[in-house]
Figure (cartoon, protein in one colour):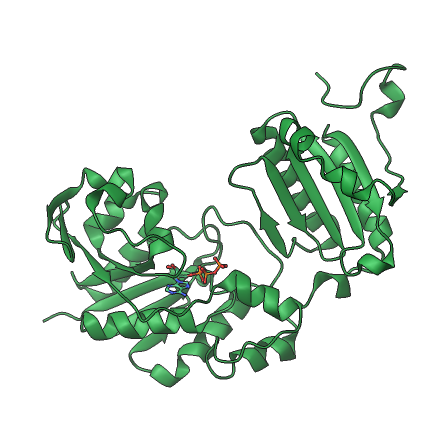
Length: 352
Ligand code: ATP
């Protein structure tokens, strides 16, 4: 009989006990011969954040699974391939390498929620069985009604635990003894110097700290005032509305500087944020260490350590009035490359 092979992809920034718990439980329940743990070079639809590069994330996975060889194997194919890592390419690659029909793609409940937005999800489900595990904070899909809409039409038979699909593959559901840990929480802890005790496999914490991979960005930026001014200039250049910079003083350390700007609709808000991140990366070589609100585009927050950038949909900005919080703070002078062309009385804002 051909081998039963699990596939577990992700960013793994960093690899943690939630991942290990899922892998080992699923491998046991579905009697897998091995599980390939595959860090993405760049996950689709995931923002780029400051932190270890793909090779470094692979090193963390290698270390994290090293005590479980030969069951768990760190797999470098997506890192080697480069570019955006699409699961269908990976699955097809594995199929031709292992010559097996028995491939199991393991994902958490958070990923299942939007599985019908994955590129070529129907084709993926022609190649693999899907294994969905519980994950703290995410809904457990009890009935067909809580399935992602795009998947419902593929369901042929449902006995509660195993779903048969029209593609002749199956979906299995596995309940874990949940571990409430996520990459984002670990990154936050690392930046603020908190312990990762019990949350990552042995050695992972030491490797991260030795290499300084998740240090707070303020350690890398020489002059935050200059960075605030430069980002303000980029925002104006991109026609953001009403770009304002605040210097809250050193008592607000580490978040001393703030920029506020807006876009005239949610799409423009996201486009402005995207442009700003790319320009900053090009000039300074770093990405924000955290991003919030990008999926909705009403209030996008980019965390650059001592500088926090708020980009609003202009209507939401008027609603939240967060600038009132800093009414007494110092202002940062921001250059507006369009100002010279504006007539007196014109409002700053998008130009046609
Ligand atoms: P982030 O906070 O950066 O999104 P993450 O750990 O959720 O971190 P990935 O490393 O991309 O992100 O996750 C890889 C896979 O592991 C996904 O399928 C995800 O659902 C699953 N996973 C992550 N954490 C857990 C957990 N605590 N329990 C079960 N599955 C998990």
